[in-house]
Length: 344
Ligand SMILES: [Zn+2]
Image (tube, helix red, strand yellow):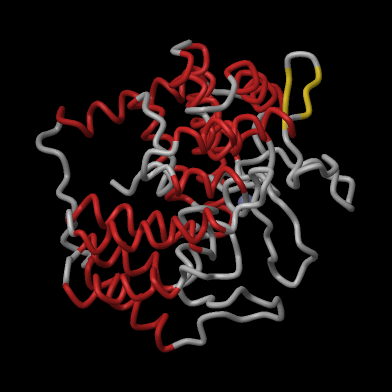
């Protein structure tokens, strides 16, 4: 992966200088940008539509999706400038999504559970706790007898996926807003059963009981499918030997190339979160150092992509902001995967 250790040092120095050597920390809003206004405009444009394009059949309802619909925009807009109108609209979206036919975080109720949990934390209002519970109860009702959920997504045959974006560990993460230690234990057993272990390395296929290779002969080792996302999302309850084996495979495989890029969904920074979580769980500094190496590499990739395309990539999951948050977490030696571990 080519890791410029001097670049890591430079990154650390730059952070220190930003934190005070040249005066107070920068304000949350800069003179040139009106962030609440930008969020309001985004919401306006989203509502004006068309919201979705393409031929792929989308889940119903699609508009309440946390990551592709209105819910995520509403959370961000509310965070930047709270209003009753935004909160009410979000509450309606969360409730609309209770029975979403897709059991996963991107479109379905696990995503809106995360929004309700965050709003309850920020406001303390009982209506958010009640809505969270309503969604959680319905989701647990739909759980299969063996501890998995079945995804019916994009018109594809039903599948029981394992990763955080569309499968098991993302759902369990969303349900952890309450105390569900039994759920964590049972999910750890499912993950132990589904792991593919070779020596001191481990990974998971995208689908329970499925093959590691897809129809194109590719093995996915990224946050959304494979060991990095399982380790990063199930780190608090996954069997420690499996966690270390999954993190070790992620490290040995190295950073993603240009095709997948730097982002947190299926790029270098997303894989880096597995290393950072391994540090958090084991306390072994070797993992922190490895995570920082991924961060420096991901920053270089993001910078290079910006030079080549002439613009940044403004997506949390597949673009520059996710890379920046991962790098910041590496500097702080904390592992808070955006949204799944919190919004602040
Ligand atoms: Zn992805």
